[in-house]
Amino acid sequence: MIYFAMSKGRLVEKSAALLKKCGVDVSVLLEDTRKLVLESPDKKFGFFLVKPADVPVYVESGVADLGIAGKDTLLEEDRDLYELLDLGIGKCRLCLAGPPERRSALTGPHLRVATKYVNTARRVFAERGEDVELIKLNGSVELAPVTGLSDVIFDVVETGSTLKANGLVVLEEVISGVSARLVANKVSLKLKSADILPLVEKLKEVIA
Image 1 (cartoon, rainbow, N blue to C red):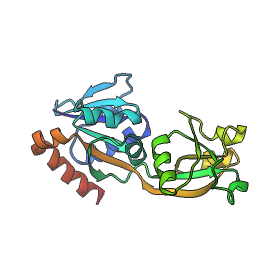
Image 2: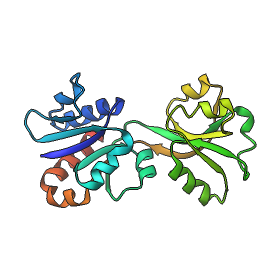
Image 3: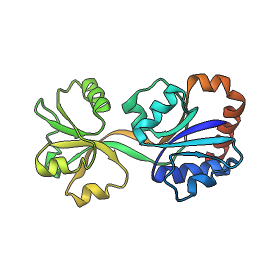
Image 4: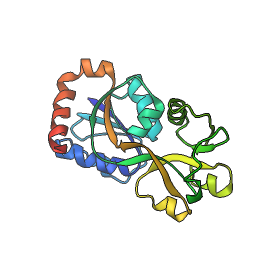
């Protein structure tokens, strides 16, 4: 059996649609259930439904053979995995955003940046030679500049509607092309290559 780690939410439906086109029975993923461990009726595939940030953890450990996670999550977690394929779903950007008046004031040692992506932000600003104060938040990052907790935020932006609703704008697109990726455990890729590689080839055809 091939085990997938997948993030709960909208990405599951999009991932299931791709896998279905590859001949994978994903009917269990579309059921209304609170179960976190699911198996396909033909017993060929198992699915672990976890939080996005946990997908790389399950795959690196070998509990899951394959995983589907956003590139933003993979950059933040920086786990020892094989990134096999850009699935082209869940597309977004990692951006600096804040009030419009911050457009001309994005540098300086006193810039306060709120983000869920502390590790990624630290690397980005280090590469730019900028010393900023990073504020770790776990959700509703847009609230930080509105309340004065931070000057700007570093976060994923899909449509920008949440930013607009809170009086914020994209100030700088830092990392583009953020989308869901298929990742594999390194040992699983060797031991289960006869099952995994044909699936990867089918996914390539579907995406193309």
